[in-house]
Image (cartoon, rainbow, N blue to C red; front, side, top):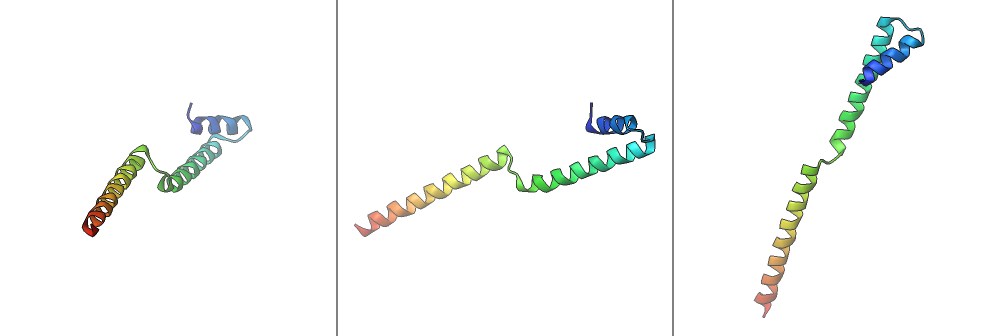
Length: 75
């Protein structure tokens, strides 16, 4: 059962008419969507983490390459 249906049924049991219960369920749904959108911008997916890991590994490898090059150039 969806959250909308649960909220709607709960408000109907509390004595709200159909239109008020439906409006409140829609308002709750909109608030959840808004909050999810705000948090989704700050959260990383597994794909995001994998891409960041790949970029970090490449950067470390590049840094090590330049460090080794500098060491051998100094000899």
